[in-house]
Length: 227
Image (cartoon, rainbow, N blue to C red):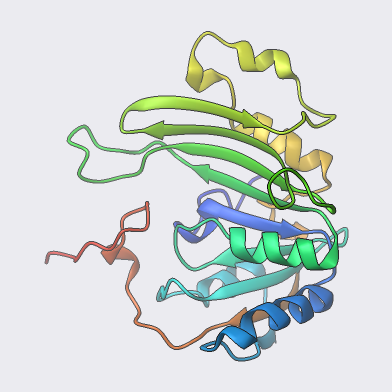
C-alpha cells in the first residue's frame, strides 16, 4: 500500500529520511537552525501522520516537520514542493548517519502547460561519511523538463539496483515508481505507508507569510489565485 503517495501535494512530493532517532535528529537540527535566527525550538506533539502533515497548511515555505518512524528512521517534510536537502544533508553529516530523499511527482501537466506538474522520480542517498560532494552517495533521477524526459545517475550503484533496467530504449522507462519503492524497501523504508510512522512529531514553524495550496504551482512558484 502507498497511502501517502501524492496524498498531500506538494508536501509529500519530496520526503526525507534520516537514519537516527527523532530526539537525536532534533538536537542536531537545533544546533544548525537556531543560530541562524528566525527559528525557535520545535513544537513537540503526538499525532498520526495525516494530522501531522496537515499542520503544515497553510504553507509558508519555511516549516520543517520531523516524524519518528519505524526501524530507527526519522522522516523530514517541508511545507512546499521543495526537496528537504538542507535538513537531511546537514543532520546526516553531523550525526555521521545515512539519509535518503525520495521524490515522486506525477506527470499531470496540461496540454497548454498552464496547470499541473512536470513528472519526477528521484532517489538521493546520503552516506555516513564524506564523499566527492559533501556526503551525497547515490543519485537516481528521472525528470520531465518542459516535455522531454531526462535520466541521470551519479555515485556507485546500490546493492539492490538492477542497472540493466537503465538501458531501456525509452528514457521514461529507465526509472519508475516500483523501482523507487524497491530501493526504499532495501533501506527498510516504507515511507508511503501510514503504519511506518509513529505519533512522535517535532515541528519548526518560524514566522513567515502564508499561502494557500491553490496559490501555488506544483513546482513551488507562487501564482495568485484568480476567482
